Length: 354
Image (tube, rainbow, N blue to C red; front, side):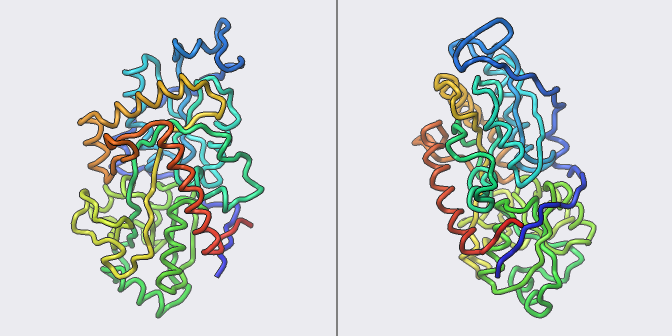
């Protein structure tokens, strides 16, 4: 069954308690330089060896309170401490992450605009949007993978189901009646829902939102029955009982929610999906800058205190290098594999943009 994806999404804004505790004040957006990469004129980009000499715009292509935003706000202060300049967050949401990603792909490649990329706008959307994509994989340079996370399938506590099998049974009894929310059309959360529908043979009505915050608010209110989210942005609401988790989508249980079964344990091994969040930059950003930023990210995620914050939210380490960390080269290989993998999922599901 094909799943048309509406261009218009439901609007809203709701910050979860867990996310609020991790949102330091964001600085204003900074003007971009306009020089040739690697050159230096007064008031523009400094040579790569001296980078950064001014604030670096850190674009998040989704709304506040989602995992993309949380991950960026965890590492931004640490980047400032290590590299000596602020990394102000700029949320530019829309089109499943495409709007913010496109802005970075077209930005001056001088090292002063970077992106917190996701599996959605960094892999899934290339197949989903096709020729309508304003950028291509080769328009972005991979810098470093910050975190991998399980997706979690949950329901409003008002729904009388406590397991994934019970949800499937109810959906089969009342086909098309239950709604499943995601943070946007084409996101990994939407595609996880599509995998569930395919594997379980059920019909759920997809309701895309413009971010995790609005979607979570609707499910907690009971207006939407089922949801899929990255674990970090949902975990606070799960822990306080406002959402009922049914399964995580990784091969092993999350240490942050050890009592929640995997989708394989729940009887649906084909519903496996891992979200990821990493830093990218415009493609022609000077390689010394990419390497310097990548090394800083690798060092930051190795810090015990920083990683403890991410792990408590359900995060898993990148695991792209022998030390379990990341590097620009390793992240580039990882992204290429994800583009191929999710392209097949999109084709199999029949999802499309209308």
